[in-house]
Image: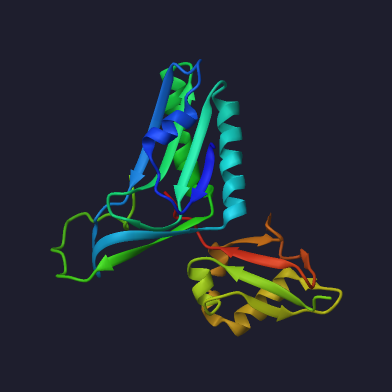
Length: 146
Length: 85
């Protein structure tokens, strides 16, 4: 299955098997993992994702359709977790399989950027309260993956 | 026969709606989406600042016009800015 919104853990090896095909000389897989970022409220232990399921899956189909128009011959995989995802686990996998590497890299990059902007998925952080982190010159905008 | 319009929100929009879906009364002929949203903000003032950044879906179809007619039995879904990935 190439488009999934699931509460179950995501595995790169399973994604690779779902994506490969005989003519795919290149397979690119991106896995976004939950980071233990320090926030003002404490350290991130997990991110909780919610999605509007049917529009979400439709958005994945639209991304794959556009990618296949821009990069002919590419097969795209879009998987996203829902529910609580602990630090270190994979929240999202995007993969692209194509005859050549340039299209596979470009399509994977296109797909993850578009998913972040256009797919109805939201995250909130779960933190472990603790000492306030020392201020840094540049702090990430918020807890995130990849 | 339905006499209400159901409104669902996700993430911050759900919080602003009071934590769950709301049912708003509607006349049989329906009403403009803009009017419905005004009534919603009257009930849930916290929604006011969020609405300009929300995508609004009518029966799972994105709608951009406040002139769209919404009828009893319809469902409105509010999507705040996405943050997946």
